[in-house]
Length: 95
Image 1 (cartoon, one colour):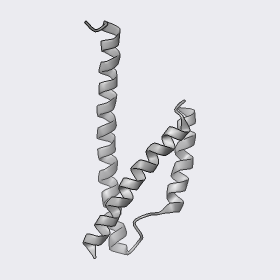
Image 2 (image 1 turned 180 degrees about the horizontal axis):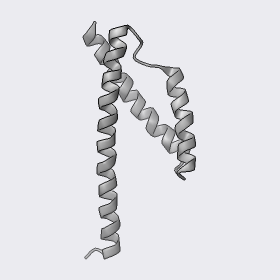
Image 3 (image 1 turned 90 degrees about the vertical axis):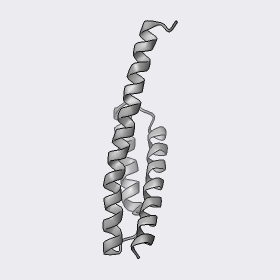
């Protein structure tokens, strides 16, 4: 039998994991539109300057939130690489 406090904490973790997935889904809906707009106006799929600014900004946010900035950077790099991959696909399909 699971300890009641452990069960409550696991329920909270499950809720947070679900919220993260919904937030990522919303983020990708917006970045899909960004990719479409970039393809329409002829901008490249990646924007290294913006990505660098975002990484620096989110490292600061992570520090403030008491989250390891290295982890935050790795997570953002993974997300950005997926976004760029999607933007490249959109650009190919648009042209």
